[in-house]
Image (cartoon, rainbow, N blue to C red; front, side, top):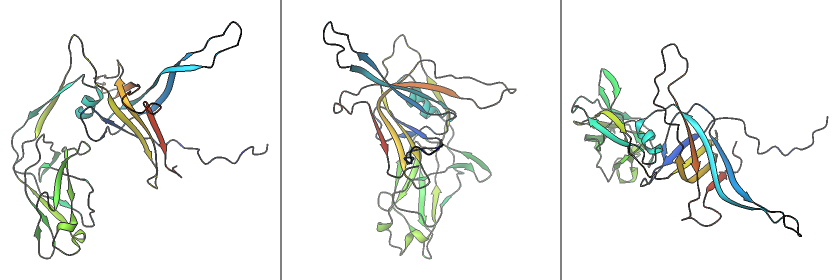
Length: 287
């Protein structure tokens, strides 16, 4: 049987995707982390067409465009679950006891500017339990470990930024141009933590007679080994009922605790007509 076409440049093998959401009021996307299924997104609409008495069928009109889909979340971080609720949940962090034993963190040499390096705060040198804080971490010093160590200054040589992708909730970014040491990136950087009060417990509350959901944006991205992407961005997304399952599997069961979430993306009328629902983009050469 002969080959009928050689046009195969846009064949994609399954490789997973990253799901991010940006809740109302957020300025950047939050990576939801590990999922345990395909990420689906199906475009639907309502059709309007009639058979006239003397001129055949009218042109087909479509309306009420929406995208329905879902995925199974297994990274059950309360921060991400709260954002997925679209205002359904109220998150409350209960503080623990101030910790003065957080060991130093060393950023490896050959770091780069404007890259977020996770602030990793461990309970102690003998307890590798990671800590999370609601307030910006207290840092005693940040030192460039050059032959003559250079003490770095916040908001000049580095900045601390809130980062939902970091377990601690915070990351650090460096600005080498403001450092006085020659070739600063060739040196390690040591972060000395002060006393910090970690979050001891996070609680999600829900329940009222009625609730108005606040839509969030969603971005689904596959990145190949050349850093080229295929991405679907949805502008106004609501969660569907039944997905937030707070289950506890038995010890005799396989798999992981999971939330099989579904959603519906609808028109965002504040955007340009014709571009109000979605944007699907493919980098040239993406695999």
